[in-house]
Image 1 (cartoon, helix red, strand yellow):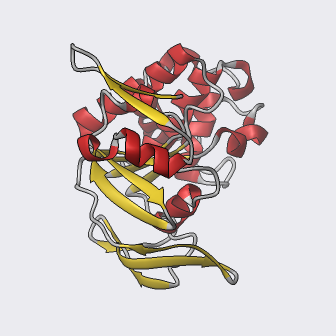
Image 2 (cartoon, rainbow, N blue to C red):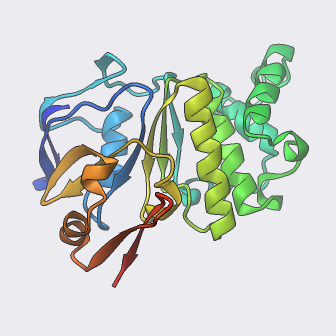
Length: 247
């Protein structure tokens, strides 16, 4: 991004965004409610255009429907999908809304099987989306995002509604995808703790501006307190583990 600003109508969401996210990095996106995290995701997907400035994603201007970007949306975005078979939902990552078009072809079936295997979801791919657990639903959402073999993966608050074990499970899965496939990951989250052992860097929305920084620079009590407007304590244990807590 270079000097990017975004408006919704006459309202300025944020401005002065100038940074580069390294290819292959695992980057968390953080900020208080209403700071514009989902706006950032929509901007990268080409769903909205910047008011000023320029953006390149994977070496090209943003555009809608880019198969090189996989999206894992917020849970409520798939609330209508309860009656759809999990494997058919994954297939829609390629077929879009064209129900019945190519959904039973051998090539598509093999591609769906590959995507399910990438997230270890073969055992429940035949079940309806509404019949599986929240963590399994997130695996299906990630499989759908991976079916086009993207170079970038955007996850919009994928830990929402999951218990602690489920959160750790999804973060470790995403880390594996990042490490094994070299996929650039942007992971929007409210809670940093499940990600701190895996992320390289952060985009943080502070004082109306998205900033980019490395973990050691951003995960700081003073900066996070200023970011969230409430006291945040960063603790580093003797074995090198880092976690945050509110006072």
